[in-house]
Image (cartoon, rainbow, N blue to C red; front, side):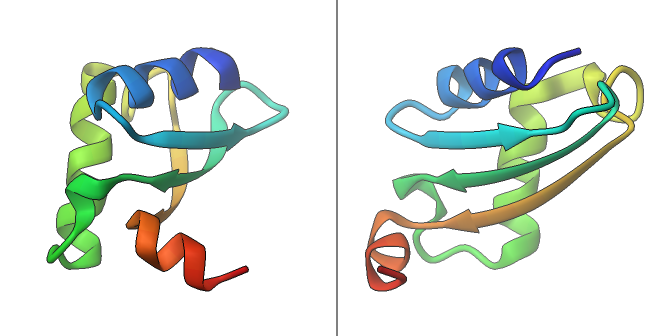
Amino acid sequence: MDSARIQAMIENGLPGATAEVSGADGVHFEATVVASQFAGKLPLARHRLVYATLGDLMGGAIHALALKTMTPEEAGNRE
């Protein structure tokens, strides 16, 4: 498993989202995902949306995924 594949799966599964994924060992990854679909959702619900884009890879080929999830507005306020 590689970061680019995970990024593509997240961005394809959440249209309009942007994802930055890193992870050097091939099983532990970190991702920052910005998506309008997160508006009004608590962090757990946001994480579930991301996990759904990865399906059975979670807990298998992807052993761990640390997530930061934000709406575009939240991401804009960080800069």
